[in-house]
Image 1 (tube, rainbow, N blue to C red):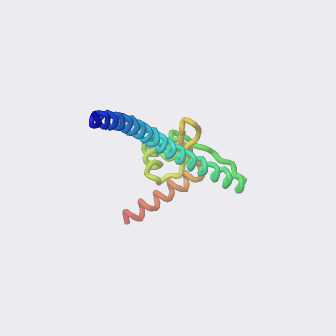
Image 2 (image 1 turned 90 degrees about the vertical axis):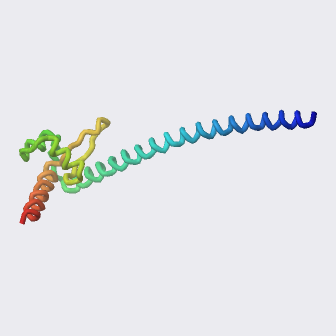
Length: 127
């Protein structure tokens, strides 16, 4: 009889442990989701910091900024819009993600400088 009581108690403990394990797994999944959200938020905050620094720099220089879309930037230098986006994604162009839609915009002055730098590098590589 004592063995049956012990087995019953052990079975109850195993059930409790199983529930605790399931709760822990669920909490682990929630934590993983929160971690991903936190990382995304961190990236967005960093982009906002860059944008604020750019605005601060512009205000200090007192120069008006002419913003270019990728289409406008491409037309300015006579290339395809996809080329401009590739250059931006490769880090060859400075650009800014703006708004909730994360639109890319280029400061025209910086864009021209960056394209000139790319041209110089191409000339150096060809010589």
